Structure formats: C-alpha cells, structure tokens
Image 1 (cartoon, rainbow, N blue to C red):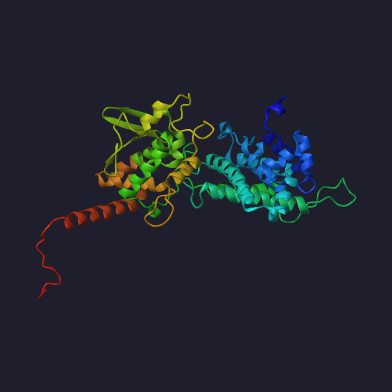
Image 2: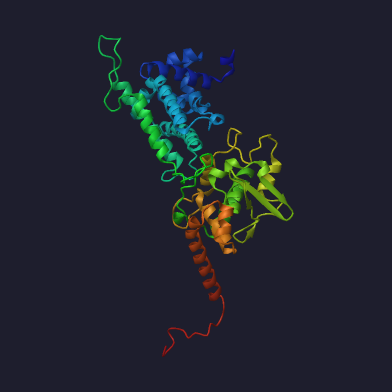
Length: 430
C-alpha cells in the first residue's frame, strides 16, 4: 500500500495534519494520531518529543507546505491579466485557509506552549510558504526591481493580510441564530470576500513601476531602480565574494561570476539559457533579457583574471551538467532559477563577508560594481546603457562613483611617487 511505503515519521505528520485540521490541536490526542498513522504511540514521542513538537513538524514537513501548491503553476503565468490571476491566487489561498481554519487557530492558541526550538521550526515553515508566495508574486507582477519593497517583504505582508482576514472572518462572520437559510452576517470591515481580494489586488498592482507613455504593453516594464542608492564594491570585497562562491559549489560560482562579470540583474537570470552563452577563443558574450541584448562576460574582474573566454566558472558549470533543461541556472526543483533564489544564493555567499558600510551586501551591488568598472575602462554612458539595459540618466550616479574611484586611484598613484618637490608643511618658515 502507498501509505506503508511512507516512513513512520511522514505517516505521523500526515495523520497529525489531518486531525489537527479537522478538530484542532487541543481536541486531538497523541493516541489518535498514532492510531491513524498505524504506528505505536511510543514512536510518536521518540520522533517528536511531544504533541507540540509534532505540531511544529506539521508546519514544516506536511505536504501542504513542502509539496507544490495547486495555485502556483509557473506554466500558466501570463495567460491571464495580472489582476485576474492575482484575484484567483488570493482566493485560492483563502480557500486553503478555510480548510485549515482549525489548524491555524490551534497554532495561534498554542503559541505560548512552544519551546524555542519548536518556535524556530515554525518560523522555518512559514518562511518556506512565504518564499513560494514571493516567487509567484514576483513572476506574476513582473516587477523586476521593486519600487519600494523586495518580494519577500511583499509576500510577508500578503501572508499577514490573508491570515488576518481569515481569522476575522472565521470568528465574526457567523450565521444568524436559528436561521440557517440566512446568509452569514458581515463583520463590517469588508462587505464581502470579493471586496477584500479586490483591495489587496489593487495594492499589489500599485507596486509595479508605471509604464512609459506609449510603451508596448507586451514589453517588460522599465525597471523602477534607484541607482543613486547603489553602492559599488572595492576589489578586496569582490575577490572575497568570488572565493566564497567557489566554495559554495559549481553553479553558485558560475552565477556569481555572471553577476559580477556581466552586470546581469537578478530578474534577468531566469531568462538566461544555455544558448545565451556564445564564446570562442576571443570573446564570451551573453544574450541577456527578453530582447537578448549582447553583453560581454569579462574574464577580468576588478584586476583579477577568472579563467579564459572558453574556460571559466560559467563554462565549467555548463559542461558539468547532465540534465536536459535549457535553463542556464536551476532552482532546487530543477526548474529555471527564480530571482528570489538568485538573491538567496547571493545572501548565503556574502553572509560572512564584512561590508564596507556595515550593511548586508545586496545583489544590486554586483551590478553597480560592474557598471562602475566598465565606465572606468573607458566605456561611455550611451554605450553602457546599451549593454546594461539602464538609461543614461540611471547611469549618472554610477558615473559619479566611477569619477570618485578614478580620483582615488590617481591620488594613490601620486602618493607612491617619491619626491613631489613640495616643502613639508612642518618645515621651518613654511
């Protein structure tokens, strides 16, 4: 039987999820869970320690968390208008919460009974759900570079809104006593679920950068990036990042090499395919973005060479693969990597590297560093605009950073020249 092929732990988690969802945690005994899972109750305590340990495992290991969500199908993205797709997505989330209302109430009601370790496990489960929602919203909205909030924060807010609505709706939207034929009485905050969903959809759509007047609606939106806030990285930090990426694995090393060596934006990485890399003994070019702009993949990064045109971190990664996916980089599910996963890998690589301004290193800094380096090598802003996909105006703050770095390099060279001919300021009579 299929149930017997599952491990005892998985059967216990599945059984607990079923019982907790239907009757709540308080009304469920460990004996009921063990009997439904067809295991000894001792096995339950050996695996999870207590009922609260089992509840924490349900939140992190149940198939509803670890399995693919039926409303999250990348293949359907773009087949319906964004407002319609968002509405269907939010409605599906609320319907799922309706089915899990007893479990949700139990998690909230039992929160004070969790140990520190169990609370951390619960947090990891919620983060997994948040990341899945973030990937969906980022892909659906096509934000590229969010105007104000990164997709992880948007997803966190959406989760809070959905959980809050579900809690309010389940506790206040009751039937009129003695009149089952009457519709539920509204709680007054929203006249209906549709109104609530429409409000959230309107907010989510407002996060997208505005389209330029006359812009083809089929083309991606212009990136709403604030390049004035970008900070380029000094050479020692860049080389530390490359070293850390190399230790993290072949794909991660290749990914960071592409970010720092070609200035590719995180939302553009999923569009790269194996065919996007064109190279021979004299050049290595990437076809980047929906319109396949040609961008050189530098073998020299901040004064250090990372291979040749035909043998570098990216070519090694591509040649090492045995899968049939056309995508250049893969996510955990062997599907094309998502922008969210790109940022997560970058954060993992840079976690232990001290930033110049004592702030987390962001993936945008890789793009800023590449742009500044190209300007220092003599590329004009109009030419760099063609390569980077940024407007000349967006490149202005980076050009100022390039000038500042050039001035610093010149000052350092002057300091290395002996005998400038100027009298020391502390010389008598100066």
